Image 1 (cartoon, rainbow, N blue to C red):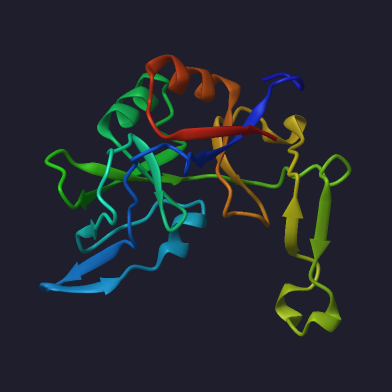
Image 2 (image 1 turned 90 degrees about the vertical axis):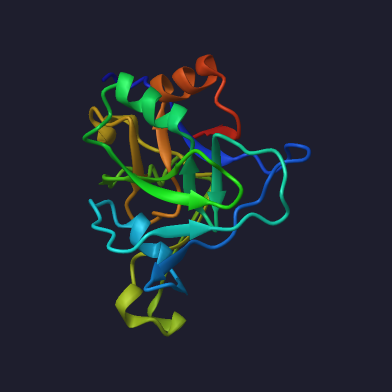
Length: 193
């Protein structure tokens, strides 16, 4: 990969008219629904899920092939197939979920890489935790990032990942963005980073 490769934050287009809205993922433990720890999906590691995950939809609306449930990427089997054709199996894990009102299975997209790649010099604003913030375990880490920019030289050959220290963001390469657009995947929004 060259230094001029472009990267994009992969987000959920919240402005699609009549779209559905997925609710918080729930784990079904012995017939009892409990809130699922969604932060696990930001850790950049393969997860072993022991109980089925279910999601309700409210309000009901147009089902999308890429959307978020409380920041967790949820995808249609067409996205899984596309990522397989792009040979990204080592970069993502697809965890089956049941979505209310859908016959087909959907999947949580779990990115398996966290890369220290934030280009602080080009990023609009970067705020770090300071001792006076009262969070001693977080001092030096990112507190807020605005206008995120990644340093392509630090990314290597990755096509989908989360940036270290700001792992609520999912980043994809131009190759992935173009493939999703060409396939007509519904729901994603891309912002160059």
